[in-house]
Image (cartoon, rainbow, N blue to C red; front, side):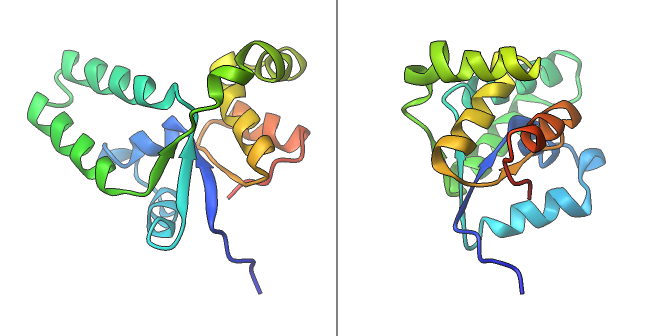
Length: 140
């Protein structure tokens, strides 16, 4: 029997797969369904990453401003909690994780949050998955 998950860390790669139908997979849809009974936690850089990808998609004519706005409205309805402690850990534990695992500090912020909260990570990023396994962070 699988353990009930109340919360997990949601990374930007997985979040943005919900925006683009050609990026949806059974895994991304399952994680989205989990938000009916669990909350997602994200580091404070997550809104900037989401906005940057939306802007880039608009610039490349992959999305319109209206589609971006609608996606942001939908995200606003989901139980996604932005961590207010990310910045306090950026220059210590997050930076150390990045150094140790040879990943970006941005990716390390998701791992740091998962480690600090002792919750699993949901990601599509292959390097981040590998790094999570190295530090014993559970993956959804």
